[in-house]
Image (tube, rainbow, N blue to C red):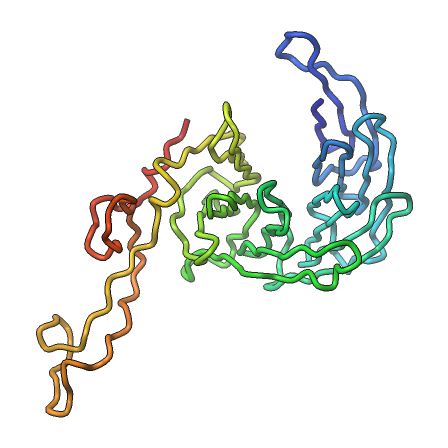
Length: 324
């Protein structure tokens, strides 16, 4: 089945029949009173929809009957509205993001839904995406303001313990008007992606937080990112944008091939270009200087014993991503 949300508030359910590649419309649900559907996500059992009418609905995949839902307007501030969602089936919870940095957590096993907790994301800005990774069920990834945050999930009843583990950001020179609008994680391989309102997609190393690369994926904003690991579609990154295009991106080589290059530390020595002259009270045993700050990116040879400080054979750039 395929569920599609539309600007008129309707959700159309389509289904493939036989060998036909064209799905057939089976049912139309009117759940948001004519307001645009802002988010639509599903598990094997249930579907969560979030509407511009500031309501959420959780309904059954099998019967299409509403299990839980309602308007959340009483919890919203002036000019605040719902933006996105995430359905955690294992703990019967729905996470609903807003335009003002807030994430509401509800129990959705019955109607009316049970309010469990409220998260406030920093820095302030719209919560545009809340995503998980099947290989990492203990964390959530949130695209908000101009950053991607990794949250540590807690079990039902311990929502107050949910907190931010780390945060990923673009270079400091990025224009403040560029907002993070999408996120996807490949936790088992060690990378997280963020899509931005200017069409750029960034890739970070999860463990170090280092920005590995950034490339222009779309003309206009990047609306959605999805990492597909399994064949025949994967492994690849899918992106869609305001230019109306869906693109697939492959990551050449092995994940361990990508690293941020940092030069070796050097001692204070007159023979080093740019170093100050050594005084009479200084010796060759002085502590090593701090590593030079650099943004150079290299594709490291996994079969080499070098730490990457001298091998610049594969300068890592946008062209390393092959669009298919």
